[in-house]
Length: 265
Image (cartoon, rainbow, N blue to C red):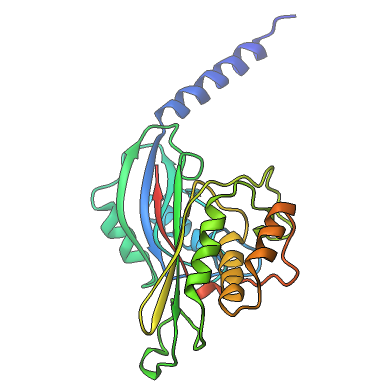
C-alpha cells in the first residue's frame, strides 16, 4: 500500500545521498613522539594521539570530525611519517595547517594536507610500510634525555642478526611474530627489507613490508637481540617459522626505540 510516508522516506534518502556526495576527503601527513601516549588509536585507559588530533581538528573546523589513521602504533612508539584521512563537508579554511599546528602540543606536528579521491583510504590504500629501530650501544650520560632510542650497552653479533633478517625475507607467513589476541584473518606479509646497520656506538634495524601484524616489529627486534646474544640459534628460528609457532622465549623489544618512518601509496 502506497502512503505519503513512502515519499518522505525516499526524499530523505535522496537528500542523504546528495549531502554525502558533497563531502570531500583530505589526507594529512603528520609526525609524533609517542612517549606520553597509549598509542595511535583511542583507548579507554589513557590519552591517544588520535584523540588529541580529532579534538583539535574539530575545534578548528567547528564541527565534530573523525579521522582514520594508516595503522595502529603501540604505546610509546614514534612516527616520523604518519598519514590519516578525514572527510569534510566544505573546503578547508585558509591557513588550516597553521591553525592546526598551533593547537598541537610540541610532540605532534602536521606537515602537509592534500585533497584526494573519496576512495583513497589511509590504511587500506597503503602498499608499503617501513620501520626503524634505534639502539644506543653504550651508556652515554649526555643522551639520557633522548626518548627515541633503546640503550643497550652489550655486545651483539650483527652478522648473525642480518642472517636472521635474510631468513625473514624468504618467508610469507609470520604467525611466529604476531602478538596473542590478534583478530587478523591471516598471517601473510611480504617482507622486502630486514637488515641492521651499525657504527661504533649505535645500530639501526630497518624493516619494510606491505603489512605488519600486531606487535610484529617489536617481536622481530626482540628475536634479533636473542640471536645477537647467541641465546637463539638460526636453526631454532627456522624451525619456529616452519611450524608457525611462537618462540619458546619470545621477547618484545621496548617500544621507545621503534619509529614508523615511511608509508607508501
